[in-house]
Amino acid sequence: MIEPAESLPLPDDPALAAWASALNATGHWANLLDAEWRFVFQTDELQKTLADMGGVSTARSQLGLHFFSEEVNQRNARVLGGAVTSREFRRPYFSKLGPYVLASTPGGRDELRRVVDPELADLVDELQPQPAPPTWIVRPEWTTAGVDATGSAVWFRIDDGRGHVAGFCVLSKPAAGMSHLGAAAATADLAHLERMRAVERPDRRPTAILMADLEASSPLARRLSTAQYFAFGRRLVRTADRCVIDAGGIVGRHTGDGVVAFFLADTAGSESAAARSCVSAARTLRDGLAEVAARSEIPTSEVSLRFGLHWGATVYMGRILTGGRSEVTALGDEVNEAARIEACATGRRTLASKSLIERLNRADAEILQLDTRDTRYVPLAELATATDKARRDAPSIAVCEV
Image (cartoon, rainbow, N blue to C red):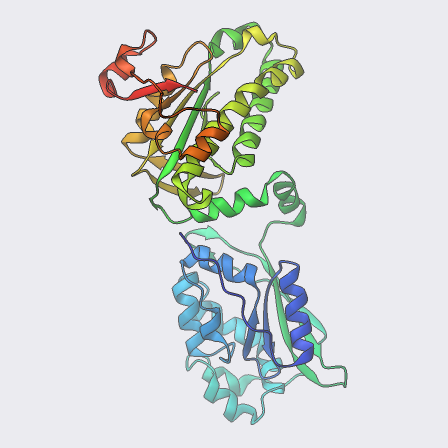
């Protein structure tokens, strides 16, 4: 699990401190430099983004270092990779900003040569000092991990109110325009995004597993028009995701009419809380199916979900982020067993494994109105609805209805 970034102390300069506080509070990506181009602040959101990319935040170790120093370049190389720290990228970048840097460097060229990366030192003699304008735009082009990360940065000068330069701000944004970012954010649940960050780095995590699937979906799809079935499927997926999110879970992969979700012990607070949330989400989705059907003008008698709930003690989970999607997936025997349980839950049933139910403490069991001390279980192989795969792969998994 990636540790949350620790907020950096505000700069000593009042003007820089005011900007740092405002930019941090509004969630911007931003770096602040003092009048001599030394790092004095990086916003929390930029720290988190860089930590997601490289697994470590270097912001604190950069405080006081020159923006174009060798030390900063080495730290960026560990997080961003070689493209943005390459000689081919940095020399044109320094040539563009160098006149402003030289103009505000006490000691002039000799001092600037001393503090910048030796790979840039020969360019100092070519610079002509020029006072930094109030604002300017830089559009660097680079890739990280093979992904186009071209974006833009608005630089602006920060004055101290007495006509003196207090420092500079680098206000960055990704290549996507605000219309794309806004559309993605409009439907995203912020708490769920934070839970997805918890599994950014793949690892084994104890989790409750929920699997659900629509029964007899193929005959239903044949009876309905394509447009009507698509609308029904979209409403079902949105309802399922909302039930999972509201219960504190993480939405997994969607396959056809199937739903997968995970309830981590780490984010729920305990194994019992994770198990309780899993059962609660299944019940809420089961109860909400009637409204989904009604809104889709489908008789409730024609739609039903089967649920399989299971506990995964050694599930290997992680987030997969590509150019086309962002999703959480999991591997392991317990994931396959959850699928076998779900396939056996025909007839509108919700089957939960003994290993999940016995994670519940007394308080959580009472909330669910379950008496775990007197629960009776049946092995999958003995169910009348047991599938061939269940009898083959998980015949001894004990389950009960919840």
